[in-house]
Image (cartoon, rainbow, N blue to C red; front, side, top):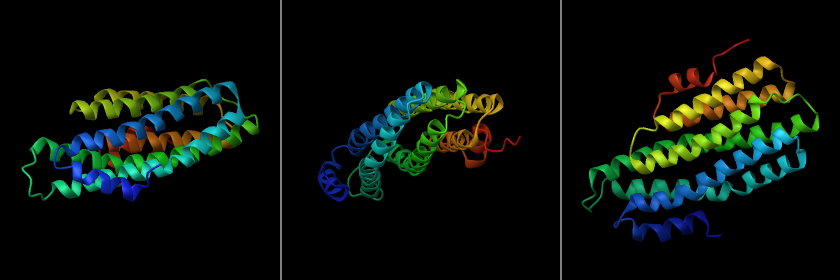
Length: 219
């Protein structure tokens, strides 16, 4: 696999042609991998398979290099575009700013998702209760990741991604109400955090994103 620094050097000569395309190609596979692992995490939680949950955790840890590489490419594209000697179209610059802003929050979402899966392993090993809404919330978070990238490609407001993320937020609150063990409670908290980070990546301010994700809910 090409290292992050080398990938940026390779990408930079292409940037004057179309930096947005470079970013799309870099971000797409990374987000797909992230989203796919959330789908797998949802499935193994439903089945109660702690060994496969461990495999998801290993894959997310291994994907850290890919995530870092994508972040570097996004930052390089933004740096080249503003200011730039090339006549960049304004929509390109605006989209690059969106990607850079999103990358900061998705990086935090990625880290917290690893923490979530680690606690999920503990939940399964301890045979704690798993309300059906909990794996469903994780699946919908993964879908929201895919939708966010699709909306960015279309250049529109990511309303559909936000809606799916809010479904995940509602589902974890129902899971909390249904009853959870110690690790399950932490998994729910981590889902709320990653949903908030995704909503912030979509352009919402932190206070609003936290509220919509249920981070201020107390029982």
